[in-house]
Image (cartoon, rainbow, N blue to C red):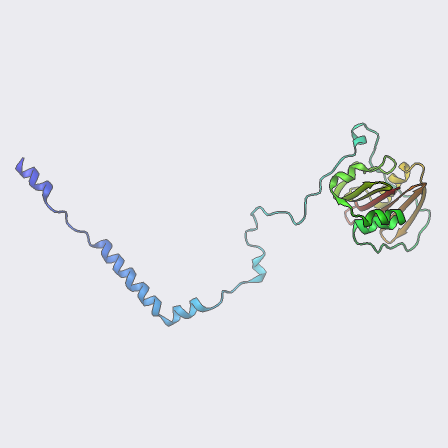
Length: 227
């Protein structure tokens, strides 16, 4: 028993290995801190290869470059009253230079006439919901992918402006709206790759600008005004 107690109380040998490593690291850091070559390298600006910078983390999930444009079906689509556009090979009734100077859908809506201009000047509310509030005679295309929509309702002021894209070509889109614009006096023109369909009737007007895209679809600006 005495031998066991004595062995338990004997001091443990000290391992100096860790202390030696710490000393070596400390000496190395001290040497690096005064090494002119290391100090110069640390002070130099970082070099960036711009040709490779864009390929960094190419597999990571990134936010989209623009808001996702989802389709907003018109209520009549569910009832089967609206059909997609079909190919339209008929030439327009007139051609000419009808270039648009407006750069926003707000400015475009204001070109429909004095009443529309006054309504637009009062300020339009921007929301995709306005795309579903078009009249039955000028409905939202069933497969429309909404990019932007705005509108306003008030005394003597009903204004809608919608920008969307569709898979149908510009001529087919103009023909689709031409068939549905009951009661409107229509005028169709061509400006380059853009079909322009304008309709007027007592107290109301609309304009459709369908521009062909390279993929066979078209970009659409549709504006409607009523007083």
